[in-house]
Image (cartoon, rainbow, N blue to C red; front, side):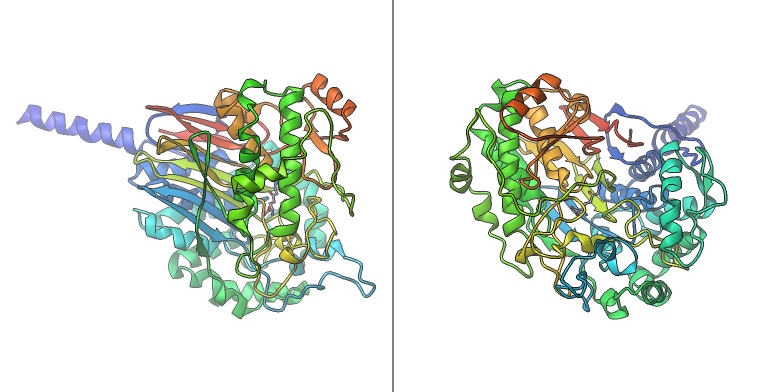
Length: 563
Ligand code: DON
C-alpha cells in the first residue's frame, strides 16, 4: 500500500513537472532562435507569445488553443503587429481536413472609391495610412471566435495570459523600446489622449509596459465573447475614436463583421502538397504560381544564391506580381480566376518568353518607392496530434494607423491602404492595382499574407509564414525551395539572405549580405538592383520523423518554444 502511494505521488509529481512545469516570467524571459521538440511547438514574433501558446498545449489544449493564446498575447507584447484592432488569415490542418479562415478587415460601409483623393484627383497617402480614416473594420476577434470550435480548453483560460500581461505589465525588449521611441512623435500626432505607449522619458530595454485599458477590453471579450468587442462598451469607444479622427467605422459595421471560411488553395509541387490562403489574400496564388513556374526548370540542380537560380526566380516573381495587380481582389466582389492563374498550361504560357540570359522589362507605369519599416506577424504551430496552424495577422504598417482607441487601449489598423486607392498609384509597399482591388463599401482589401502548410506523403512537413508586405509571398516561396530544392537546413532556409521582385517597381531588392558576385552578374544582365535592410521574418516548423525543428527568424525578437 505504502509502495503504491509513493508511486502515485511520484506519478503526480512527474505529471505536474512534465506537463505543467511552464513557469513563465514576463519580466524575465529570453529569446530562443531554434530548437527541437518532440510534441508541440510555437514559433512567433515574441518569446512570451510562443511560451504561453505552448503552455496551453501542455495544459491539455491543441494547436488551435495555442493559436488563440499566442495571438492574444502578441496583441499585448508586440503592439506593432500583434493585434485585436487588425485582421488576418489562418491556414490549418485538423485531422485530414484543411481549413482557410479569412478574418481580413473590410472597408466600412461608408467607404467609396475616391475617398482618399483630393479635389484634383491626387491621392492623399496620409489619409489612407494614418489616423482613424485609414482603418478597416477589425477582424481578429471574429477570427479567434471562429477558431474556438476546434479548441479543447475553455476560452477564459486561453485569454487569461493576455489579460494578466496587459494588466501587470511585462519587460520590453530593446527592439520594442527603440521602436516605441521612434514612433513617439506619431503617437502624439495621431492621438487625442496619452496612450500606454508614451512616457516622459525614452523607453529603455527592461522597462515595464502596462496596458490597463487593453486589459479591460480583453476582460470584456472574456466575459461577453464577440459582443465584448463588436458591441457595447468597446464598440462605443471605437466609434468615439472615429468621430475624433474623421473615421467612418460605424456601430453597424462592427456588429455586421463576419469572419469567412474559404476553400484552401491546394497545389502540388514535386510531390509535396502546398496548402495556402486563397483571395482576398494574393499570397496562396502567388506562391502556387511561383512554384509551378520554376517546377520544370531544374532548380534543384542549381545552387542557392547563384545567378542562375536567382534570375529564374526573379522572372517568375515578375510575372506573378503582374497578375496580382490585374486580377486579384476580394472574391466576394470581383471574379478572381484562381483556377486559371494556377493552372499548368497558363503558367507555361507565362514563362514562354523567359530568357535565362537577360532581364525582361516590367511595363513602366507609376512605379513607387518601397518603404522599409513594416509590421505584420506570423505564428507557426504544430501539436502532438499533428494539427498544424499557420496564422499571419497584421495592423498593416508598424503600429497600424498609430491611433489607439481611447478607453479601449488597442491600436487600429491602417489596412485601407492595401486597397488600390487610385489605379496605378502604388501603396506603401509599392504595389499597384486597378479595378479588382478598388475600394467599395464592405469589400476586403487585397492582401499578400501567406500562411502556408506543406505536406509530404500526406504528413506534416512545414508550417511557414512571414510578415513583409508584398515581400511575403516571395519569402515564403524562397523558404520552401530553400528546403525542397536547395537542400538547406531549416535554420539556413530562414536566415540566409533573401531577395524580392514584384513587377513594379522594376527593381530587384536584395538583403545587404546577399552573394555579391550574383548581384553584379545580374546587374550586367540588365537588372536594376536595390538593397533593403531585412526581407521577412519567417517562422518555420519542419517536421521530421519524430521531432519538430523550430526556427524563428534572426531578423527580430522572434522566438520558438515547445515541449
Ligand atoms: O495584408 C498585407 O499584405 C499587408 N497589410 C501586410 C503588411 C505587412 O506584412 C507589414 N509587415 N511587415
